Length: 283
Ligand SMILES: Cc1cc2nc3c(=O)[nH]c(=O)nc-3n(C[C@H](O)[C@H](O)[C@H](O)COP(=O)(O)OP(=O)(O)OC[C@H]3O[C@@H](n4cnc5c(N)ncnc54)[C@H](O)[C@@H]3O)c2cc1C
Image: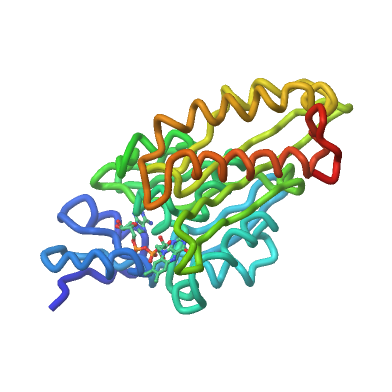
């Protein structure tokens, strides 16, 4: 029989987390597959504090135990996240799977996380002793290594309310059993007075954790789209070089998977008029 605790409030959950060796359990869609029979679970699904999706003038707050299906019904969830969520599995998984679980599982193939990375989202992490904020970019310390203490829980994901309107999201190969490579990509673009202010590009399912490289994005920041177009080839090459030592050989070659990544990145730039020499705007 599965051993577990069913706290009624977040405070009670955090007290149990601090005093017992427990595994947080939200929707269970990852944990059930892992089948850890020896674990004592801390069930989070009934905690109202973790399920709300709210917004104020500047930020959107998504409770860690809000399900993907609930997010699709919320007026506050921005289109880029809505699109990513709508590509996650089938309705049964979306009814149970949560954002906290997608992050807490620590996998590179978590489809909501590239959106959080590109959006510069933050996590509110709580424990019986207090709370702290962590950028999603800093939450991933390495393969299945997260900045999350044994006594802590992810309480909510906080996204900016503005600046996510111009985006590009694509998931390749995820649902087709014959598609042997799978990559998800989230890009967010913003320009101010004709200059590129934000060009965030995040990849999922290419490495043991979702990836974003702010230093490479810096190559095009502050440029006009025409100037960025002139550096587009160099920009795509820099990503290919950065990704190639990270990608592990899958059932398809690293070369093929890098080509998929750079094609998605190129399509993101195309969408916002960043076209290289010799390319026309229609691609
Ligand atoms: C058939 C199938 C298809 C799937 N397809 C996809 C897909 O297309 N895209 C995708 O991204 N994922 C997919 N998944 C994986 C899974 O559904 C997601 O990762 C989901 O977000 C997990 O959420 P959960 O609430 O079920 O997590 P759980 O299984 O409850 O937990 C997962 C991990 O997160 C930890 N955790 C949960 N909540 C918290 C919290 N608040 N604080 C700290 N740690 C926490 C748990 O301890 C555990 O380690 C699929 C899974 C299945 C079984």
